[in-house]
Image 1 (cartoon, rainbow, N blue to C red):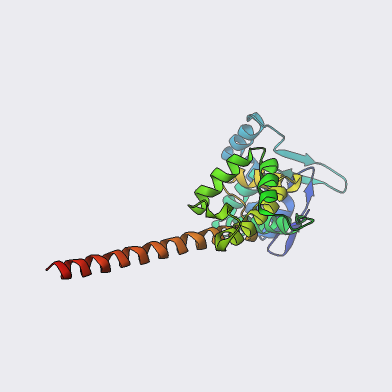
Image 2: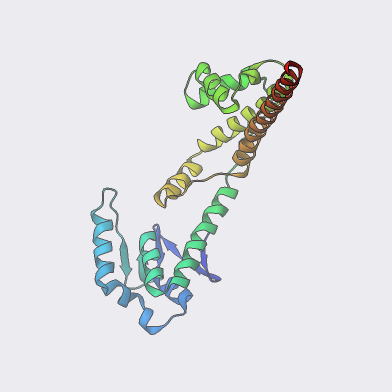
Length: 237
């Protein structure tokens, strides 16, 4: 697991709790920012109570008096709260540090790959199996995505691009089933975020290209209809 690093200082982690003493040093180590002052704050005490009495409750603070891990250790929510208590600037540094750590975790996940080049029908079957739906559901979904059913026919540009997109969607679906990524998605959800990797974005661009080409063709058809209409009106008059 990547270390949480704030302003070039590593923040130790013990039993899923972060060292408040390390955070204090990273913030500049001012006397009035000592962890004891933060923990005595009324708003901090109320937040601790909320965390420990919530549905998914856990210990928010653990203070160790001696030994190698002596100090105060707090949950991630209190890390954010402590940073906000110190200053908006330090709060922003902490937010960006957690974001950077999440990106590092995603980059370390193993990439899912397909062992062979599958036909479009095979891709439809494997996607249905991975998503636990019927192949009919897959057809309905991609008919809506591509706004046409030409993608499922064994010819044409739509078929070739659809095969590429379905293959990538299958790879992405297999990746999302890894325990590591499930954990990251849960963490992102807790902060109102969602994870989208580059491959998913490229698949989205592929779908947009199909729709763009369909719009261009529609515009050409409308223009041709207008020209025919004008010609007919000139002939009548």
